[in-house]
Image 1 (cartoon, one colour):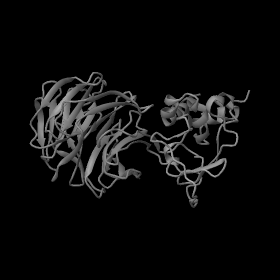
Image 2 (image 1 turned 180 degrees about the horizontal axis):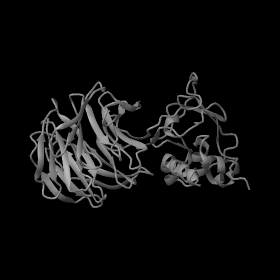
Image 3 (image 1 turned 135 degrees about the vertical axis):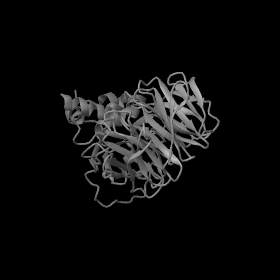
Image 4 (image 1 turned 90 degrees about the vertical axis):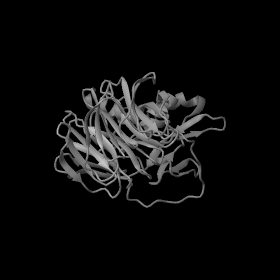
Amino acid sequence: MRSFVNDGSVFVRHFGMAMAKSAPHVYLSALPFAPTCSLVSTHYSNSFPRILHVERGRLSHWPSCEMVIPNVGDYVRSVAFSSNGHHIVSGSSDGTIRVWNVTTGETVAGPFTGHTDSVNSVAFSPDGHHIVSGSKDRTIRVWNATTGETVAGSFTGHGRSVNSVAFSPDGHHIVSGSSDETIRVWNATTGETVAGPLTGHTGPVRSVAFSPDGHHIVSGSNDGTIRVWNVTTGETVAGPFTGHTGSVRSVAFSPVGHHIVSGSNDEIIRVWNATTRETVAGPFTGHTGWVNSVAFSPDGHHIVSSSSDRTIRMSNITKRKTENENENDVNFTDHSVTNDEGWICGSKGELLMWIPVMHREHLHRPSTIWVSGEHETRLNLSNFEHGRSWATCINN
């Protein structure tokens, strides 16, 4: 039962955007594209014979990228999970902050306004009630996560842009990293500096985060390295970690503190052992621009990342392959296109089917067989019921 529930949770995360838009596509679009390992798909698919069938290219396992949220506004500079994993907060170069639903990708709060320049970093407080932000305007603010009202700040003290901020595990302190190459720790209510400035990096500090026990801080810098600091003494206790070929723009501890995730200008994401400095997962690829922000999900199984390619990705730490990943691609001349959300629509705008992200790169339609994606996914539509007759897809 637990395995079925866990698979159902993944099923909802992958297809939540389509299901929220149109409930029938739980059957018409989600079931057909679920991988062969899916317990939900295995249990229900035989009851729905008149849906599209993936004849070739169906995944054997859930893919690493579970969701892409398009049309997020201006350049997204930072993202973070809420403590319950239900929401993502993002900060953009237009100076605004938004909160998103993890399942549907919809905006649930914002935009929050108040900063006078780009919002470089955002983070939820441990209880999820507040959001802290750091900006190019050299200030730090604390917001009500629901109403968007400023509840503390502006905090001042850094001499240049504030590139990264984070709450301590108890929510009493905030750590910040700046282009002035220093790190500071603040009282989250009064804005007073309680530790720092911590020095050692030889370039702007792009990212900082507390360890789960609150005793250490991890930082990433334009100098291409990662360091771990003792909060009390200000000494470097691990590092520098090396391996990225560009500036380290974002770092974060795993929920238990054993690992660190990092994102870089080299468009790569890596997971490190926090003590030995060894790479334990990755490199993860997929973004086509700088990786500006990375974070672990509360269960430690997923990573959310944002990039200058204007997308947000949520990935499983274990990479998966499709059944035909090593097969050669086939080129066709007849092309069809999806809309920005991945829907194939009828002449009157009817939602006929939803195509998952990894299958959208190319879409072809010779007769009743549609071919989509870089791995030549073949869709058989010969028994596909849709529109007003969609309810007949079930086997009565």
